[in-house]
Image (tube, rainbow, N blue to C red; front, top):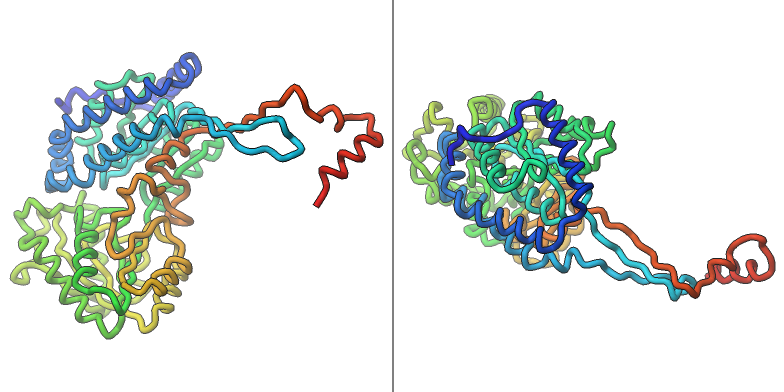
Amino acid sequence: MNIQDAKGITGMNEAEEVLTRQRKAFILAGPPSLADRRRDIEKLRDAIRSDAEAFAEAICADFGCRPRQETLLAEIWPILAAARHTLNNLGGWMRPKSVGVGLELLPGRARVQCQPVGVVGIISPWNYPVQLALMPLLAALAAGNRIMLKPSELTPKTSALLAQFLSGLFPEEQAAVVLGGAEIGSGFAGLPFDHLLFTGSTAVGRRVMQAAAPNLTPVTLELGGKSPCIVAGDADMAKASASIAGGKLLNAGQTCIAPDYVFVPKDRCEEFLALYRSAAQKLYPSLDGNADYTSIVSETHYNRLMRMIDEARSRGARVEEIAPAGQAPSASGRKVAPTLVVDPDDDLALMRDEIFGPVLPVKTYGAIEEAIAYVNAHPRPLALYYFGRNAENRDLVLARTTSGGVTVNDTLMHIVVENLPFGGVGASGMGAYHGEDGFRTFSHRKGIFLQSRLNSRSLLAPPYGRVFETMLKFLLRR
């Protein structure tokens, strides 16, 4: 594909016109059939498979360095898996569901019927610019909607490629891409969509919700936060440290569900640090010039991470860069060495803000209740990870903490289970998608009551008399 041929919308007037055309087309055509939706999903699936390498090249160019293998694994595979799961289950999701009615309403019947909401707006981020754009788009298509997508300006080549990609698959009245910076994004969030999904930071999520409020647009917010790892005293420390390193350093930590800090028992802290260092060095034996290790997406984000590290060091925290032969990577490649910060103060930036980089704070605890109390004293995270063999302690952590999702004895993996909802809670977001949850998010679940010819409705109407009082007594029974 030629990125120069991108057919994206670049102005708000044009975006408003496209939204109007999409809504008119939706009303005129009505909900698409199961066969139509399956064809659209198959078309998207086949195209993403064919153009996977082109997307890998564009993402690598936007980041400066991002291995194609990482893109194929973390961006392309989830979309293909979601398409497969949706195609296998969409007929069942669309089928009206019969529900019971009260005894007093028999022989009436009731059912729930899902219908598309209309036009869905999607604002996608830069860190996984293909997956986090096309996964919700796929769910919106499955639900029978029209879509307008606003991808991130921080990955311009990928965003332009998405515009060209989708314009080759669907008419603009069905799916359109709006290109531009923060000003366009702000205007996009204020359009009167029938549903709006935003993926990004908590701070921007608040502004998106404010922009959507005047139109009473329902929003799904996929945000971030500081996702903790709790390593129990009985954990297999070698496996735990390897999993945490893999989850933390994928995409150089630029992952919304990456482990943001780790709690380890005081008496096993040094063991964890040694094993984490070993795991990181095994994954990335070199940094500069290593095509397997992703760069930080922009100079702004690179400088933000370096300020976090410098602040921790200046405040006396134990900071360890994991670099070959002790050599940190050069700033020109925007690569930040995997870094450990041991027992940092809570008022440091790296403990207040989501890190979004390969810097891992490590805190210690005495009893598991201390770790639980710390997690609960902070905003609810998008993900939580627990490592340990004891089921009682595991269940205690699961019951006493609230997070968007959880993986036990591993990291990240809950996001690729299509039968699990993916979403946040509190400051980490609202609403969910993936699998049937995505279909429901972009559907209106219409409740329908089918009255029988034989019914008692007339007995409940004025003039009120003895028969009514008898019926009312029955209705108000214990």
